[in-house]
Amino acid sequence: MFPSMRLTSRLGLRLVRWNSTAGPTLPPLMTALRTDLKTAMRAKDTPRYFQFLPNALSAIWASMLTNYFPIIRLNVLRALISETNNAAKTNSPIQTDLQLLSLIRKRISASKDAAKEFESENRPDLKETEDRHIAILEEYGAQVKTMSVDEIKTIVAEELAKLKETGKKVEVGFLLKSLFSPGGALDGKPAERSEVARIAKEAISSA
Image 1 (cartoon, helix red, strand yellow):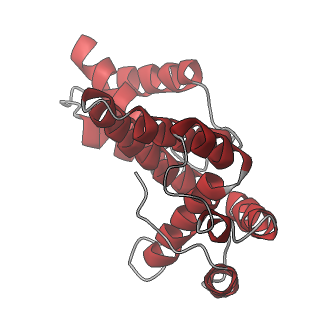
Image 2 (cartoon, helix red, strand yellow):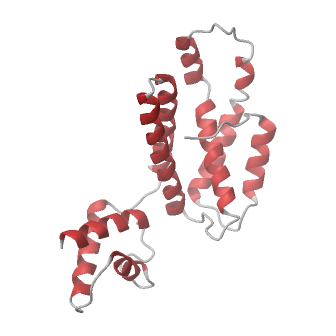
Image 3 (cartoon, helix red, strand yellow):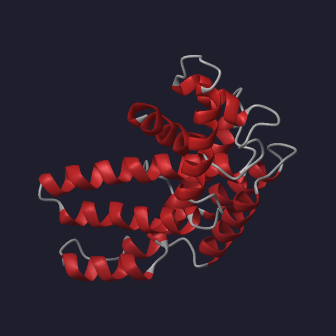
């Protein structure tokens, strides 16, 4: 679920310029997000058209206009870039596509929760907006190439078996540390840590 944002060219351009100097490293996907933001802005300033519409505008016509104008994509892109910029000011900056993918998946989860809530409140219009957020986020998330679940499961199972041979009690944190430590089976591999943690937990509980 994304906060309401003023869709003005000036604000958007400042966002793009600020992000271009936010840090020394820029994930490839973030470059794509910035490019798409500029493209969406050229479409642009769509809210100004709505101020001239009559108050009695039908929901169907409003939905058609929303589909035509890139308002939702613009909001999604700005929200992602804004969150990345905010993270750059913390001890956990987003510097890789995998980290950006983690952020995208969190946003997808939030939008799914919001969509369910709006559906229960009989607000199909708001649910539809969240569904579009999800579709756009999944589109960008799919651009990040990661290891398959089966590949991760195989590596986790092998590492778990190896650690058990030492006679030590294997917990999720210990297994993850072994997998991601320098020289570990997943060190430098395109595997999202949260996904590996989920698989590791399942592997330990079923062992």
